[in-house]
Image (cartoon, rainbow, N blue to C red; front, side, top):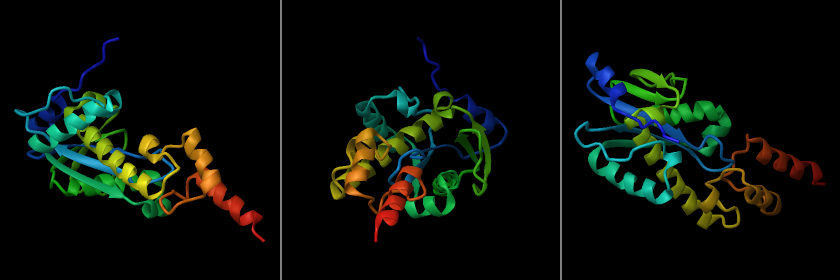
Length: 210
């Protein structure tokens, strides 16, 4: 089955309308039960676009790592996060948009190409939402790779501090092993208390205490 490869047409269209600093933006980490949500903004040099950019989910871990290194050399990159506390206080959608806003602010963009169908309200620049943008737009594909590699590395580090949950492999997503560890080991400071599986375990602990 052939896959559509992302191209530079979205960036070219926006620049033809007068934008000078066009960035692609993506986030990773909406679904996990633990850890921050991470966003990235990337401004590619059209003459130095790494070969093989595509949606990070379609790449092997080794290929993502190689492309991450190349992107960091040839592009302008800004990475930002929203914390577990912010996720619980705001909700995951708003927290992911906050991380995107922070990432875009780091590059002083005048137009952002956003993966998805919603535009964060606090971007501070013009923006275009592109559904499945990481499969269509090279700048968003690059952002998806940097965001995923960055967040995966964070979760590997956190796994060393809190062994047993499998974060080095599941990145905080609700795998069977992670859910079993939650039941057996309890909730860490890095777990999102507003997410139902975590909330339910906390509620159980409260309800059975004397």
